[in-house]
Amino acid sequence: MTDPTPAPPLAALPGGATVPRKRFLRQVLRLVGPYWNCERRAKVRGATLLLLLLTMAQVGLAVWGNYWNRALYDALEQRSVRGVLIQVAVFATILASSLVVTASHLMVKRWLQIDWRAWLTEQLVGSWMGDGHHYRLLFAAGEHDNPDQRIAEDIRIATESAIGLAHSLTFSLMILGLFINILWAVSGSVDVPGFNIHVPGYMVPLAFLYAIMGSAVGWVVGLPLIKTTNALQTAEATFRFGLSRAREHTESIALMRGEPRERAGSSLRFSQIMHDWHKQSLAYMGLISFGTVYGGLLPVLPILIAAPQYIAGVMSLGALMQSAQAFQQLTSSLSWPVDSIGEIARCRASADRVLALYEDLQDLDDKTLAQDIPQIVVERSEQAGLVIEDLCIAESSGRILIEHLNADIRRGERVLITGDPAVTGGLFKVIGGIWPWGSGRVLLPTDGEMFFIAQRTFLPEGTLREAISYPRPPETFADPAILHALECVGLTRLAPRLDEQDNWEQALPQRAQQQLGFARVLLQQPAWIFMEEATDAFEPEGERLILEMLQRELPDATLLNISFHPGLSDLHTSTLSLSRASEGKVLFGTRRGNNGTH
Image 1 (cartoon, rainbow, N blue to C red):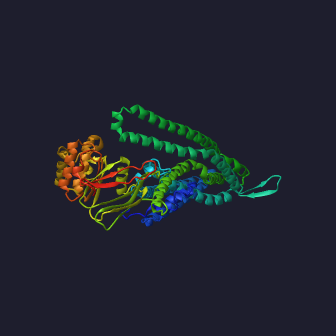
Image 2: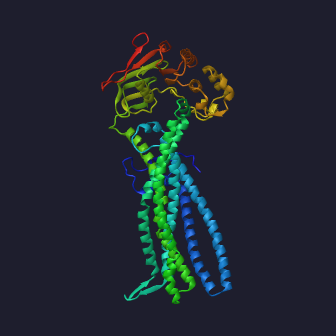
Image 3: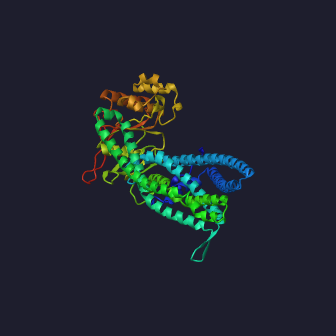
């Protein structure tokens, strides 16, 4: 289904967060435009053309069926056995053709739906998981709550509904164009008594009048459905997110006996679903009640309108039934907006949520490229060391944490970073390239791989081998290297479980998780190691042993270690002490050697 060639970025979509997301068709076009012009556009356009041709075939079969309906009733009126048998054979042909066309149409339509969804998902996931956007989005303003649900669920609804609606609209327009001529020709003309008015094809304007009045009333009745559907989908996503969060933190909740609080929160979120559900039910009730009356009159009304022509002998029974069916087809096509209002509401709500996420991601890029917004520049340099030039770190709100920080860390140094946790944590994120708020420059070294070890080690679900090898594929490292890494960090007991699958974040204690983080370091063999409280689960002696092990196994690696435990300075060549700005005043970071100024 997917093409291995990288797709063009969603930056091809027009506009940013300031563009209003009000019009349904504009929303859909902004989603379909880049897909139509993507790298596999030949397949996409070919499938779209084939879908159009199959839709035309469906319309042709509908017209054929309309004429067959007239021929059948004429044969019945004439009591012609031969004529009826001929129409039975014709019907079999129509039925077989309809089966082939409908099945082909379904397969092509579903291919387009899943291919568009796959492409759009690839683009949104790529943007969300690129350049730390998934992290920075947490601090950005905008409508991007539950991005995982928007990508997983709203893209599915938007793509499936948009293609379904496009097909039904195209079908309705073609039916409208063809059945106007049929109804005009079959219905004949009438003279309005007392007004000396001759009306040719009189059933056509009546069909338009019936459909327009019905559409107007139906649209007014159905408008609340759009708003209630949007609200309900948002409430559903919030409810799912709450349950997901509880699953992720199940151990902490159990230890703190937080189940009553979680149940209360879940109940509150579900009560919002019930509230929005009932509002949507009322909206549906009004629309369905109107649809029942509107649809109930449709089979009877054209027969009653055409009956005087049949009774007067101007119209045959076949023509009567053909005109009644053509009237229904015409009014049904004209009623497409009313019939589709529920699906339009679902599609519009999902498209709005997808575009809101895209626009906020795009806004992150726009702010990164903006020249008038202060931001931290992190880039590779020609130097062999790590250079920090006039660095100002701020909170996402703009409040300064530290300013005028300068440092020059050379290859092979081991720097202990202490001080205010907000500042040290900010520096860790800045060097990692995920915290742009502030100013100044961080020049990364040109040589060697950089590896970051956070306080909480991320362990993906799967085998232990996959968890140790992350973020590289598990086949990257041979068993002897993995076993040696486990031995060095004191986890030899886990060697027999390398190919065992488990939720390792739940199965292993915090210290073992941090030990696995160091096992990754030994496998990756980086030249630069950045640690943020990565040994806080260790006792003092264990912490010293793990740091000594790093020195022994990776003697040439540079280490920047954020730690607040005492007694570690002798394991490092220098200390960087960072203090937080107070009451708007700027305090400088100071760098000193262990035996004096460095």
